[in-house]
Image 1: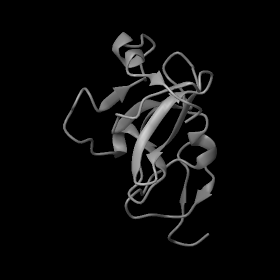
Image 2: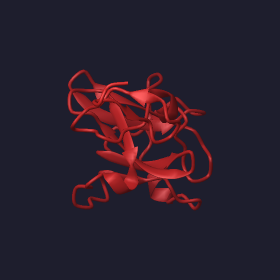
Image 3: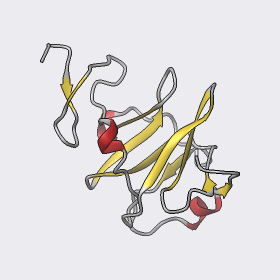
Image 4: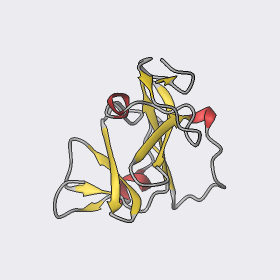
Length: 130
């Protein structure tokens, strides 16, 4: 392990260090992201030029592509999932991220055990999976 490596905060697996994301979760842990009720989430980019999409793994026919960030859970810890700078998706511990000013239409908080009905209304029908 080099000085530039870090450990995934979810599973402890050694990860390559990135100055922009000094404390990020590995892909395997990101794949376990869930809402506050335990429903598994999936994330992706909206297009080749970026953007964030999210949806529920058990309903790939619906997605939201208007969020800038999603607050959810990985291993029962609150995390922030957002678009990575040059594409892709990154998850970081909630308390390690400086959140942009709150913008209800672009921030989605799925970490509660009582989901906000407005969050589900954001989901739109897809032609396929996200």
